[in-house]
Amino acid sequence: MPILLVHGAWAGAWSWRDAARSLRKMGHEVYAPTLTGVAERAHVPPQNVSLSTHIADVAGLMRYEELTNVLIVGHSYGGMVITGAADREPQRVAGMIYLDAFLPESGQALWDIAGAERAQMQREIALAHDGGHSVPRPAANPPLAPEFAAQWASLFTAQPIRTMSEPWVSVREPAQRVWPQRHYILCAAYKNSPFHRHAAQVRGQAGWESSEFDAPHDVVRTDPELVAQRIHAIAEGWGLRD
Image (cartoon, rainbow, N blue to C red):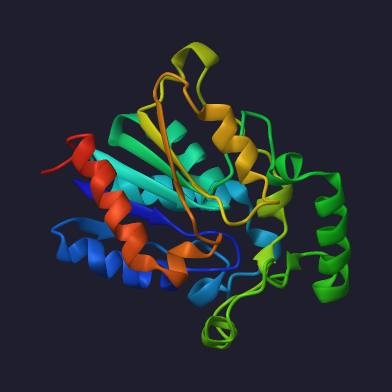
Protein backbone atom coordinates (compact mmCIF):
# COMPACT_ATOMS: atom_id res chain seq x y z
CA MET A 1 0.00 0.00 0.00
CA PRO A 2 1.73 3.19 -1.15
CA ILE A 3 1.79 6.25 1.12
CA LEU A 4 1.98 9.57 -0.69
CA LEU A 5 3.12 12.50 1.47
CA VAL A 6 2.37 16.05 0.31
CA HIS A 7 4.20 18.92 1.99
CA GLY A 8 2.88 22.34 2.94
CA ALA A 9 3.61 25.82 1.62
CA TRP A 10 7.20 27.09 1.45
CA ALA A 11 8.55 23.57 2.03
CA GLY A 12 9.52 20.60 -0.15
CA ALA A 13 10.18 16.87 -0.01
CA TRP A 14 12.83 17.63 2.62
CA SER A 15 9.99 18.44 5.03
CA TRP A 16 8.95 14.76 5.05
CA ARG A 17 12.47 13.27 4.95
CA ASP A 18 12.64 11.84 8.45
CA ALA A 19 8.98 10.77 8.67
CA ALA A 20 9.31 9.06 5.28
CA ARG A 21 12.43 7.23 6.44
CA SER A 22 10.58 5.93 9.51
CA LEU A 23 7.59 4.80 7.44
CA ARG A 24 9.88 2.90 5.06
CA LYS A 25 11.47 1.13 8.03
CA MET A 26 7.94 0.03 8.98
CA GLY A 27 7.64 -1.59 5.57
CA HIS A 28 5.65 1.04 3.68
CA GLU A 29 6.21 2.12 0.09
CA VAL A 30 6.55 5.91 0.40
CA TYR A 31 6.44 8.74 -2.14
CA ALA A 32 7.17 12.32 -1.06
CA PRO A 33 7.42 14.60 -4.10
CA THR A 34 8.47 18.25 -4.12
CA LEU A 35 5.75 20.36 -5.71
CA THR A 36 6.60 22.56 -8.69
CA GLY A 37 8.08 25.97 -7.92
CA VAL A 38 9.50 25.39 -4.42
CA ALA A 39 12.63 23.87 -2.87
CA GLU A 40 14.70 22.09 -5.53
CA ARG A 41 12.02 22.99 -8.08
CA ALA A 42 12.11 26.71 -7.28
CA HIS A 43 13.79 27.35 -10.65
CA VAL A 44 10.32 27.21 -12.23
CA PRO A 45 9.06 30.85 -12.41
CA PRO A 46 6.34 31.42 -9.80
CA GLN A 47 4.04 33.08 -12.35
CA ASN A 48 3.85 29.68 -14.08
CA VAL A 49 2.72 27.84 -10.93
CA SER A 50 -0.77 27.60 -9.43
CA LEU A 51 -2.80 25.30 -7.22
CA SER A 52 -3.80 23.46 -10.42
CA THR A 53 -0.10 22.83 -11.11
CA HIS A 54 0.38 21.18 -7.74
CA ILE A 55 -2.77 19.10 -8.08
CA ALA A 56 -1.47 17.94 -11.46
CA ASP A 57 1.92 17.11 -9.87
CA VAL A 58 0.34 14.70 -7.38
CA ALA A 59 -2.38 13.29 -9.65
CA GLY A 60 0.25 12.72 -12.34
CA LEU A 61 2.59 10.93 -9.94
CA MET A 62 -0.16 8.50 -9.01
CA ARG A 63 -1.10 7.97 -12.64
CA TYR A 64 2.39 7.52 -14.12
CA GLU A 65 3.68 5.41 -11.22
CA GLU A 66 0.49 3.34 -11.72
CA LEU A 67 -0.30 3.54 -8.02
CA THR A 68 -3.46 2.06 -6.55
CA ASN A 69 -4.79 1.68 -3.00
CA VAL A 70 -2.92 4.87 -2.05
CA LEU A 71 -2.99 6.49 1.38
CA ILE A 72 -2.49 10.17 0.59
CA VAL A 73 -1.40 12.57 3.35
CA GLY A 74 -1.40 16.37 3.18
CA HIS A 75 0.18 18.75 5.68
CA SER A 76 -1.15 22.33 5.92
CA TYR A 77 -1.44 23.73 2.36
CA GLY A 78 -1.01 20.11 1.22
CA GLY A 79 -4.66 19.59 2.17
CA MET A 80 -5.66 21.75 -0.79
CA VAL A 81 -3.50 19.61 -3.05
CA ILE A 82 -4.59 16.17 -1.88
CA THR A 83 -8.25 17.18 -2.13
CA GLY A 84 -7.78 18.09 -5.79
CA ALA A 85 -5.60 15.08 -6.60
CA ALA A 86 -8.03 12.60 -5.03
CA ASP A 87 -10.86 14.29 -6.91
CA ARG A 88 -9.01 13.71 -10.19
CA GLU A 89 -7.86 10.16 -9.49
CA PRO A 90 -10.50 8.77 -7.10
CA GLN A 91 -10.01 5.18 -8.20
CA ARG A 92 -6.40 5.26 -6.97
CA VAL A 93 -6.98 6.62 -3.45
CA ALA A 94 -8.00 4.32 -0.60
CA GLY A 95 -7.59 6.79 2.28
CA MET A 96 -6.74 10.41 3.07
CA ILE A 97 -5.10 12.04 6.09
CA TYR A 98 -5.30 15.80 6.62
CA LEU A 99 -2.46 16.73 8.99
CA ASP A 100 -3.35 20.18 10.38
CA ALA A 101 -4.37 20.88 6.80
CA PHE A 102 -6.76 23.04 4.80
CA LEU A 103 -9.95 21.28 3.76
CA PRO A 104 -11.55 23.17 0.84
CA GLU A 105 -15.02 23.03 -0.60
CA SER A 106 -15.24 23.12 -4.40
CA GLY A 107 -14.79 26.74 -5.47
CA GLN A 108 -12.67 27.76 -2.48
CA ALA A 109 -9.11 29.06 -2.56
CA LEU A 110 -6.76 28.85 0.40
CA TRP A 111 -7.30 32.59 0.95
CA ASP A 112 -11.06 32.05 1.13
CA ILE A 113 -10.46 29.76 4.09
CA ALA A 114 -7.64 31.73 5.71
CA GLY A 115 -9.52 35.02 5.55
CA ALA A 116 -9.41 38.39 3.80
CA GLU A 117 -6.97 39.93 6.29
CA ARG A 118 -4.37 37.24 5.72
CA ALA A 119 -4.90 37.40 1.95
CA GLN A 120 -4.36 41.17 1.86
CA MET A 121 -1.24 40.93 4.02
CA GLN A 122 0.27 38.25 1.76
CA ARG A 123 -0.54 40.23 -1.39
CA GLU A 124 1.35 43.20 0.03
CA ILE A 125 4.29 41.04 1.05
CA ALA A 126 4.40 39.48 -2.43
CA LEU A 127 4.34 42.89 -4.13
CA ALA A 128 7.34 43.99 -2.08
CA HIS A 129 9.13 40.68 -2.63
CA ASP A 130 8.96 40.15 -6.40
CA GLY A 131 6.20 42.26 -7.82
CA GLY A 132 3.41 40.03 -6.56
CA HIS A 133 4.39 36.60 -7.90
CA SER A 134 5.35 34.79 -4.69
CA VAL A 135 5.12 35.07 -0.92
CA PRO A 136 8.14 34.50 1.36
CA ARG A 137 7.50 32.37 4.43
CA PRO A 138 6.40 34.41 7.44
CA ALA A 139 7.87 33.92 10.89
CA ALA A 140 6.40 30.93 12.66
CA ASN A 141 3.70 31.68 15.21
CA PRO A 142 4.43 30.61 17.88
CA PRO A 143 8.19 30.94 17.15
CA LEU A 144 10.20 27.83 16.40
CA ALA A 145 12.92 26.68 18.77
CA PRO A 146 16.23 28.31 17.72
CA GLU A 147 17.78 25.01 16.63
CA PHE A 148 14.89 24.30 14.27
CA ALA A 149 14.78 27.85 12.92
CA ALA A 150 18.49 27.70 12.09
CA GLN A 151 18.23 24.22 10.56
CA TRP A 152 15.44 25.16 8.15
CA ALA A 153 16.24 28.79 7.37
CA SER A 154 17.99 27.99 4.10
CA LEU A 155 15.46 25.34 3.02
CA PHE A 156 12.19 27.27 2.94
CA THR A 157 11.49 29.06 -0.35
CA ALA A 158 8.89 31.59 -1.44
CA GLN A 159 5.47 30.17 -2.33
CA PRO A 160 3.93 31.01 -5.74
CA ILE A 161 1.02 33.31 -4.98
CA ARG A 162 -1.46 31.62 -7.34
CA THR A 163 -1.30 28.49 -5.19
CA MET A 164 -3.05 30.60 -2.56
CA SER A 165 -5.38 32.66 -4.72
CA GLU A 166 -6.63 30.01 -7.18
CA PRO A 167 -9.72 28.09 -6.04
CA TRP A 168 -9.97 24.33 -6.16
CA VAL A 169 -12.85 23.37 -8.42
CA SER A 170 -13.95 19.76 -8.43
CA VAL A 171 -13.83 17.91 -11.75
CA ARG A 172 -16.69 15.69 -10.55
CA GLU A 173 -20.35 16.44 -10.16
CA PRO A 174 -21.53 16.68 -6.52
CA ALA A 175 -23.30 13.31 -6.71
CA GLN A 176 -20.06 11.67 -7.88
CA ARG A 177 -17.97 13.07 -5.01
CA VAL A 178 -17.73 9.94 -2.91
CA TRP A 179 -14.57 10.23 -0.83
CA PRO A 180 -12.49 7.40 0.62
CA GLN A 181 -11.88 7.00 4.34
CA ARG A 182 -10.59 10.27 5.80
CA HIS A 183 -8.84 11.22 9.04
CA TYR A 184 -8.17 14.72 10.35
CA ILE A 185 -5.22 15.28 12.71
CA LEU A 186 -5.29 18.60 14.55
CA CYS A 187 -2.12 20.11 16.02
CA ALA A 188 -3.87 21.46 19.09
CA ALA A 189 -0.94 23.47 20.48
CA TYR A 190 -1.48 26.16 17.81
CA LYS A 191 -4.55 27.77 19.42
CA ASN A 192 -5.27 30.45 16.79
CA SER A 193 -4.97 28.36 13.65
CA PRO A 194 -7.78 27.96 11.11
CA PHE A 195 -7.35 24.21 11.41
CA HIS A 196 -9.39 24.08 14.61
CA ARG A 197 -12.42 24.98 12.48
CA HIS A 198 -11.75 22.11 10.07
CA ALA A 199 -11.29 19.63 12.92
CA ALA A 200 -14.57 20.73 14.49
CA GLN A 201 -16.31 20.59 11.10
CA VAL A 202 -15.51 16.92 10.48
CA ARG A 203 -15.65 15.61 14.05
CA GLY A 204 -18.36 12.96 14.25
CA GLN A 205 -19.20 13.09 10.55
CA ALA A 206 -19.75 9.84 8.65
CA GLY A 207 -16.64 8.80 6.75
CA TRP A 208 -14.33 10.78 9.05
CA GLU A 209 -12.07 9.94 11.95
CA SER A 210 -10.14 12.54 13.91
CA SER A 211 -7.33 12.77 16.42
CA GLU A 212 -4.95 15.37 17.86
CA PHE A 213 -1.32 16.03 18.57
CA ASP A 214 -0.38 18.23 21.51
CA ALA A 215 2.19 19.71 19.17
CA PRO A 216 2.86 22.76 17.00
CA HIS A 217 1.89 23.07 13.35
CA ASP A 218 5.44 22.16 12.28
CA VAL A 219 5.15 18.71 13.88
CA VAL A 220 6.01 16.96 10.61
CA ARG A 221 9.48 18.48 10.96
CA THR A 222 9.85 18.84 14.73
CA ASP A 223 8.64 15.34 15.62
CA PRO A 224 8.69 13.18 12.48
CA GLU A 225 8.66 9.89 14.41
CA LEU A 226 5.40 10.85 16.14
CA VAL A 227 3.88 11.66 12.75
CA ALA A 228 5.12 8.43 11.17
CA GLN A 229 3.74 6.34 14.02
CA ARG A 230 0.31 8.00 13.69
CA ILE A 231 0.17 7.51 9.91
CA HIS A 232 1.20 3.88 10.37
CA ALA A 233 -1.47 3.34 13.03
CA ILE A 234 -4.19 4.87 10.85
CA ALA A 235 -3.14 2.72 7.89
CA GLU A 236 -3.17 -0.41 10.07
CA GLY A 237 -6.55 0.50 11.53
CA TRP A 238 -8.02 0.87 8.04
CA GLY A 239 -6.45 -2.39 6.89
CA LEU A 240 -4.44 -0.60 4.21
CA ARG A 241 -1.55 -3.00 3.94
CA ASP A 242 -0.09 -4.85 0.99
